Image 1 (cartoon, one colour):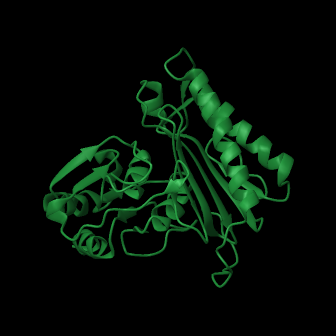
Image 2 (tube, rainbow, N blue to C red; image 1 turned 60 degrees about the horizontal axis):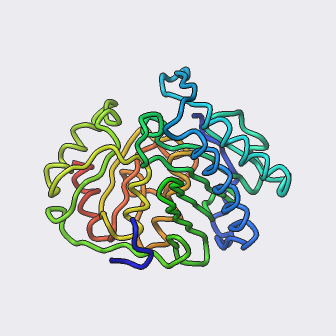
Length: 278
């Protein structure tokens, strides 16, 4: 058991990849309070009555989603008013700012609406388009992963680490839903990868990436993700020693296709990439 125990249209920035990726402590602390605020609202509504509506893309949104995002936005506006904000439920604010917060107030809204505690409150902070901070927080279970530039990922304040694996046949492949692979050749590519793995596990949304960072699972492949889905994951996975890219091995960024492959080792990641490529 590892320490810690329990278990849209792209926004374009000037390329500044030489800039330091270190994350200031004040931003980490602010992100923690944002996650606390979103978590408190999530718990207020979880397994209680609330409104669920269908958005224009047919995905659900709840009262809790909106209130949680507004609470996080209010903290940013009060303490970092020059920073930009891109959230799932409301219009962007200052999207070309050097520092950009990317918010997913409740990732896994379907799970939340069904009373299943695998939804998460997710936060990312980017500097010049590069992720320097990521938070995955599950308030019902009291679990939180924080990945920040210049330091290792933590799980509930203690260092988190992946558990490396070298063979696809020894690991489970995690995916939220096969419905992610309805476009182009995605299903054929996914089925090649699935056939090489030990078994498949569905339905954990982005909670799965926290489990990867803590060493409980070793491989995740998904598609049709949006920036608020994938940007918070990058620092969490990489800071725990894992690898996360798109399906071509490219860095995850604001212009990414929405295809995500995360693995607990470079060797496993390379094998998975080869199968996805055909």
